[in-house]
Image (tube, rainbow, N blue to C red):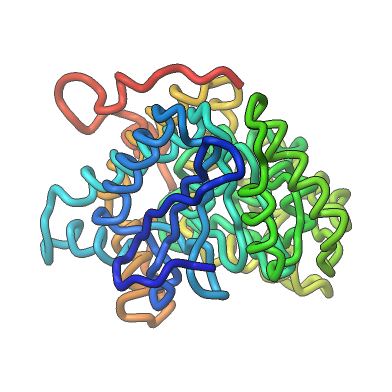
Length: 376
C-alpha cells in the first residue's frame, strides 16, 4: 500500500525475508499529477544516492500516489515565474541542474531500481522512469515528451533515450510529441515489462519475500517476469508498430524542412493518432523543431554524461530565449493555446540562432562536469 502522508514525496523502507531491506519512494502530489518541484527533487536525489551506498538496501522502488500519473514532468509554471521576473530568476538554472543530476544518478544506480510507470509519464517524469533499471508499464500508461508544444525540447537524457529507439522512431516521437501506450513503450525500449496496475502490491510483496539477494538485478527480474506472465494487462496495439512504414517515409527527407513538411501532411490522416501527432508539430515551436533535429542528429554517439551536459546547456538557454516562456504561457498559464512563436516557420529560423542554444550560458566550469561516466 502507498504510505499516507501530506508530504509531496514520501520515503520508507520494507523488510525482506532475508537480512536486506527494500527502499521505496512515493511521489505524492497527485493533484498536480506528481509534477516535480525543486523541493521534491533535492531530497529524492539525496535519498537515492544514500540508499545506493547502503549495502543493506536490496532494491529501490519508485512509485506514485493516485491513478492518473506516475509523473507529468517538472513543475514548469514555477520555471515560468523565474523566466518572467515573477519569481526567483535563479530558480530555472538550479532546478534544471538538479533535475539532470537526479536523472543521471538513477541511470547510475548499482542497486536495482524498479519504476512503476502507471498513468501519465511525461517530460521529466519520462527521464526519471526511463532511467530505472527495471521499468514497468501498465494498461493505464501513457508516455510522452510533448516539449515541441511549449517551446523547448525533450530533455532529461532524451538524446540518449530516443537515439536508442528503432531508427527514425525517436525523431518522429520527439518532433511530434506523440503519445505512446504501454505496447509502444515495450517495442521502443522505453519499458521492460507490462503488468496489471492492480498487481503492484503483489510485486512489492513478492520482492519482500526474497531471501537470497546475492544477484539482486536477477532477483528483481525473476519476480517481474513471473508476475508479468500471471497478471497480463489488456493493452492497445502499438501505434509505432502499426505506422512504422509511414513514420519511416515521412522522416526520410534530407532536411528538417522536408521532414516537417511531410509530417504536416498527416494532419488530415484518417488515423487519429497520426493526425494528432502531426498537429502537435504543425502548431509547435519552429525553434524547438530545429533544436530536436540537431539534438538527436549530432548527439547519436554522445555518452550519457555528454548528452546530459549538452542538454543542460540547451535547457538553460531556452529559459533565456522567448519561446519557452511563451509556450508555457499559452498552454498552462493563460491557457489560450495560441502561442506567438519567435519565428513562424522552420524555414525562417537562422542557424546562428540555434547555435546560440548549444553554447554554455555560464562562466567557468560546467555544473555537471563532475558526473561519473556510465557504461551503457
